[in-house]
Length: 448
Image (tube, helix red, strand yellow):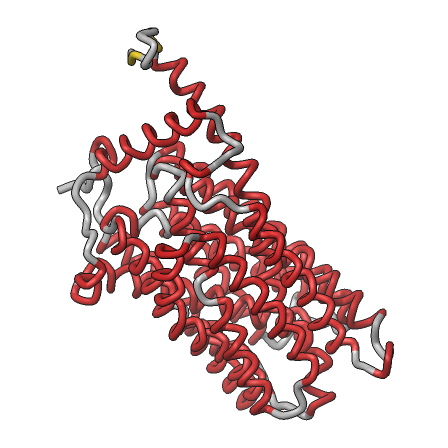
């Protein structure tokens, strides 16, 4: 039982109901819009995988050129993500998200005018540089609103937008590339970049008017609602105990480097699937952009369900290690099966696509659960820089994996050996969590 400022006793059940009610308001206010932004970011990041089906022939680019261009995006991420998150903490999420979203939309549209590999590499790097900070910025932003026992579900709901982008992006790309081919003398892949970049610019402008930096600034919440949020966050900070606040200690913190290694391994698998799923679908016998788009849509729909359900179950059980590791093991195992099937003399397209979907579901389901881990060790400015540091360094996997896959595809004509390698790396992510991350004790504190 607790006492309100008016001296009225409030029993635990009533307080819990009030907190649930406030968080429903917060969730409906924040997550749909942030999800839309992540859909747009994901579309503008990965539409290159669909554009590739026409772009390589039109520009005479090799598979290796594509792989390097797809991956160089993450070098931009690496250099600019930490400064972006530090700026977010200083000037607020609203200004930061507006800047990021408008800029990546403009760069996406400029990709339609690429004619040489150098131009391709530069624009992909700039796309990564401008988008840098959005994903870790939202992760940090949500910690301003949600206590730890509610975050995995919030993260999962937000991050599932990348899967929803896959559901929408495949058919949309197929329709644009087919239906807009030849309009104004331009190729379908050029229209893909233009038509998917415009909404990002408009959404960035809207973000300035819609977003609220912190709970105490929310005009759409009552004073009582704000107190409920502040009490929930204070209890959570107290339960987690003392954590690092000084960002300068991050670079010598072994836990931070362990988290980087774990996420790097997971992103090797995720970026491989992201940029090569259209090619896998084409290799098993579905060659038209529309068919590739719809098959990818079904796979990503399953991935979205996995992210939301796994995040929600992790919250209910207050368990992270096995929810992450189990998902990563499923993803790695399914990717190994996919490699076996693609290397077989007689290929079963249906079984191969099922293995591809299982790999996507397992890999994507681990991502929102992973982001529960940094807040066990970091708070304040250390959390702001730490989340960006983990994401930026680990995202170098997004540079390396697509490039290596492109080289392997160029050399052997198949993705098989690359998929075996990535499967082993994803399994390693599960092992690192089980060995290196301790269980939570009572009240959410680290076990001994």
